[in-house]
Image 1 (cartoon, rainbow, N blue to C red):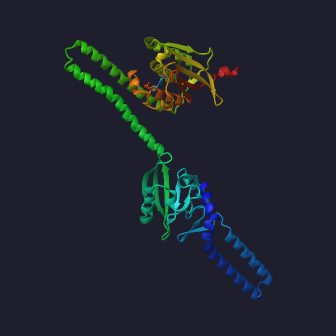
Image 2: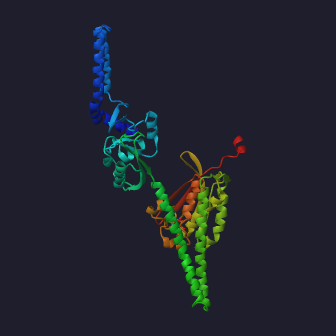
Image 3: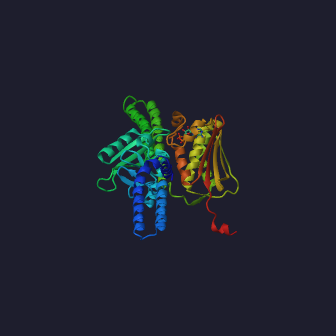
Length: 444
Ligand code: ADP
């Protein structure tokens, strides 16, 4: 364990010198007492002088070995109380120490002078490998945390704080700082520092807040537009049939935008709810692709885009949820039509693929449109992430299509791959695990 190694290094170095004097004090009186006893026994004739001398030398030798070798169980003095080296905590035995070392959260124990008496394995990232014996201010670089530790050392009151470490990548921690005297009156006050990395929890909270803010903003814009047109129709456009027709068309458009957004939000939350339940249908992907492209016919015609489907004659079924897989094909084909329409051609391909030795059915939706700049590719599946927000809105986009695709693919334990080249087009591929073969096929 890293912390134990650090302790070990200290034991062999400065610790050895520091503790030699205290160990020598105990050993010296033991050796003197033993010498006196053997001398008296020899003088009284109760022991042979040679035997007494040999026994004394044996005892002295054992004591000297104990004095020179500092092992795992050599006591270290912290204040007035001896604690086990390697545990640093009064009363902590080997199994307790092993338990503390296995704790997933960093735990640091400080002696009354503020030096590290013990740091478990998880604390290594915070305090480094050779932290034992060093002052906490030199190993933990957070001013609020050091201030909390000083306060606890001073008044013995438990403190809980949250702090951030900005480098190399910002991480947030909560620290629980508590006094510890092993429950013994007059014992020196150690300080326990238990840290918890809350970076992920804070990130999720921030994402949730962002999501609500984005969703509200996306709904607010068409709603404001609808309210504005309602006022106009009630006011000066009341008796103008031409203006009324024009405004009603815009209102229908805005209402459609709100409906799509609400539908996508609902889809996303439904998929998220089921994300940990594996789908169980055996789905024929060619059937799904055919159904979806039938529905896209009018849009493809309107944009002058030709949709081609290419699939081998015999394709195994995938393990999936037919409705969700139809949504994947729909969203990807929809994007290809809306953003890649200038390429005049969209291809939907189905084939077999292998990744990490596992067989898949691969669905690829390829367009020959303007393509997507490389720097945007890793973020495309984030909610509300758009390369060009105005272009997306103008094409009826909600910014949620690829986020939905990613969640469905995750639920199916599949893989989503996005490739794109400027001026050449984009290709979105989804690898889907195969459905188990039916028992009757297995027999043959
Ligand atoms: P949206 O509702 O805006 O289309 P998506 O999540 O489906 O949201 O897509 C996110 C963004 O990715 C789009 O706004 C667009 O900028 C970009 N994008 C998606 N598919 C394509 C494509 N086939 N060609 C070019 N850009 C695309």
